[in-house]
Image 1: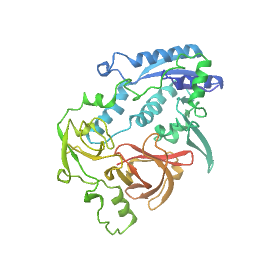
Image 2: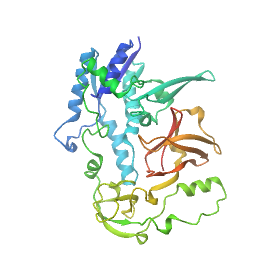
Image 3: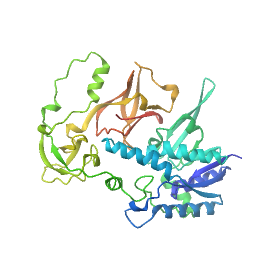
Image 4: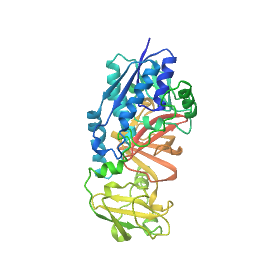
Length: 395
């Protein structure tokens, strides 16, 4: 009998995942991960992890499976929180959910599960795992969840073959309403529970507020760049190679204060991200201001009016070699090769037609349609039909 450890988060998805595995005849153990212990930064007096671990316990009791809590807050702080601070200080915007899956759930947590004699680790993600054989070797595929509205394969875009080989996604074939229905039928306490918003670690804390308590405020200026600025219609240079053309397309514009006018003040460029609209507190413009660039060195923020402002759009992005990750290692491109794929640059963005171009120093992703708010530090994932084949950090 195969043994599976399920990460019970206290939500409805992982509860139903545990139930389904038990139905399928696995020996199931429930583990709750405690990733956070600094109570000074919970915004409200609710202590979400206590409530969540209690719900997870009740579900385990109802299903008649063993349950324990593991405290991973040390590893979490080291691998996720410290990394995020560092990224923000450098003006990049990390994706904690993707990192949490790669570093915590499918690494630290998985090792604990395997030490308990588990054959697999299961989570309540809306995605599926496929298997195919190539040259006598088993290859694992990460496939989109059946519920198009909830597909969460993007959050797992950094997993390896090794991690996938030991992963199970029991609810990937179901839609959210079906999952809730199973939970009510089984009278699981989590059946009606709202989906958790926010990050996989601070419960009810919103990230900017969390960061603002840690990063020092530093007053700087907000500039507005008009859409008709000549910087948006540059002379297109003659390119000697495709690589040069792609480097041009993916490069950031170097904004300077004299290109625009000063429209307000802010508390620190490191609190803001490209494409952000809220939190600027600058009024009096015809259309809302969007952030088109932040400069953490000079502590300046550049903005433009409206979501069609040319400063928001680019046709290509670059991923350093060290940050190119193929789930399907067998499909990895060699320098000089390219591949037509579908890509997304953020969770829930509809897939976009694009092409990968691998060169010696890294990979360019060029899009058929210009993309809004390509954000450094976030992940781009690439897909063939319903399979996520690889991903990379936007640099």
